[in-house]
Length: 350
Image 1 (cartoon, rainbow, N blue to C red):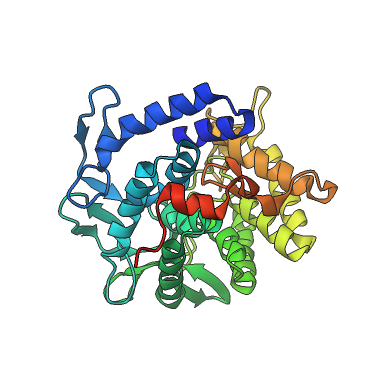
Image 2 (tube, rainbow, N blue to C red):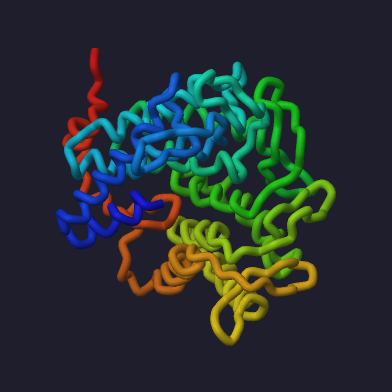
């Protein structure tokens, strides 16, 4: 998040002091990657370089290629991208015979602590960054990893249930479904599917998430689609379903995605608005309010609302931007593919 914010500031301003601060911050992070596998530890002390926390989930293990690649491009030093890519490959190289990865891993032994495979919170951005990093830098190896990953995801994790497309949880070795519990963070996946060209599956999955939203009036953080219940009915003003509606409106031009966003915005104003700000909701069944507004509501949720509602004005070029997982936009036209290969050091070495 911090790297993404600083890099977005640098790209917008060209201020070399910001780039210097970004480099300093990244250098203080790098000791976390000094493990047996290259997967970073959970904690690193930015002053001393001391690290701890040998167990991480996949999102914590492998969501670095995008920001660290941007930094390598602007600094000309490939060590940042290479550290992030090594962590990503360490996860992929430990996939099962089915091509699935687990959920939680030991950073030194490389042993899976949890063998549950899914696209939910704790794994989500690992997959997101495989394709987005490939898209903005053109590293063919990341493209190949995505291509080898999405097939098993759609074969084993996805399932049809009650006439809808869902992405549940399964065992990485057997492919057997172990849970029908999903999280509202998973609603990012239609956007990625659409970005990769799988419009049909993206639309079907967005339709499912739209149904979940309207089932309550807001999304619960967790929902079990076979038991039709939520074990954690909080809505924290999350952006993912709006993000996917925006992407699908871009790719299809279908006004129903604008209508979805209009409904989500109306519901948020109805249930989350207060005299002072917007708040999370404690329980989407009772609409009891909390007293808390996450910063990503402004940084992401409102941004995606703005982008879809202003889309037809043509003031923002979707095709020239790639968003990181925190909705920081980066321009594709500023990244030269040949230069990226040199600066990030992913030239084919035969």
